[in-house]
Image 1 (cartoon, rainbow, N blue to C red):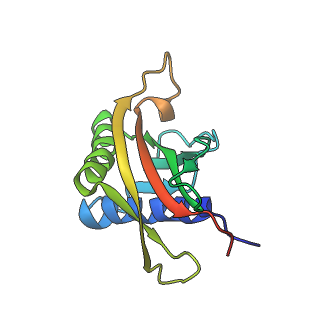
Image 2 (cartoon, rainbow, N blue to C red):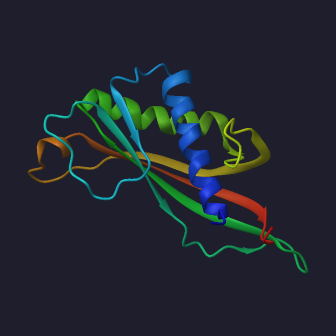
Length: 162
């Protein structure tokens, strides 16, 4: 099975998120669960851990970066759904993701074909990032402290198929 550019982007975002939340910001792994993608699943109540689930939107369509070249620019929207065990946990995780992205301004693309995940030298460049609490009328307990951090990142890459 051939890997797509989106496979590299999604895994790079996941790796970046884990590094920022656990290593850089020191969140305890026994209190925070990172899932690959949120599929609308329901979580146990009360939450055993805070949950951070990523959602990806690849429908920007991309555009040619220069005439006569396979160089493309694509804008990805990545949403991080944060289900907090408390208002403080939800807010801190959402804002921690936002400030990590603002501070770094980039997410390194990693080589997912190598178990060591070395950087490829390519990066996703931050366009914008926001974090907001998502109020839900009469939510189930697991959705009571829901935050969404939304990042728009630009990817410049060669569209050629290897």
